[in-house]
Image (cartoon, one colour):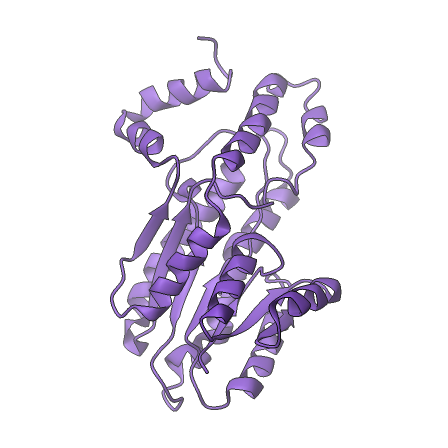
Length: 283
């Protein structure tokens, strides 16, 4: 039986990927952050889901999880590692704390580094293992190529993830381990619902940016409404793992045309268009 490791499997894209791979006969090792989620997802997805309880920011816990996977797969190689765990931090450069900014980096970038490094041997860096080399799929975002107001920390993390992915893709050619980026646009996931929007806006009651940030929060709700279901990302991930030839990056974006048009404009014009839409500057 083929096996794959997926991070952030309690909800959204990670859960959808786990479900789809199990349907196709894979054993899925899925990371969750607590026992309650481990029990719930295991009960829902069945015996071919093996929970791994760790936070991607905890390098020691990530490395400990490798032992669990190795005990199950023996001397076989993993078919893949999907780095999906992530979160979004919203705020102005004036209001973000260094701790918030660092936490955004720790989860979305350093966490991916921890997992890639820990699982390299099982993916094929250990040449004594049997089977074809596995693939690494890093879940990025259109925010890895388009910077938006109030999302500088999130943009930083996804731009960084894209550069990291390109670097290690070329590095890991030595072992035949491919690295592919999936960059979703709006997806119907709870990533932005984890932010208490009322409290977040209230923090800006005496700020020049209060109205603009409130508008940005409403836009995240609207974007989720037009977003793709997580299964769309899961199907692409399955295709990547099972295909011999892949693109290096797949952009899956229901708002693709408006974003492509935005990128065609000179940067200064795009700046003003976005700022006017968010009421950062007057029309």
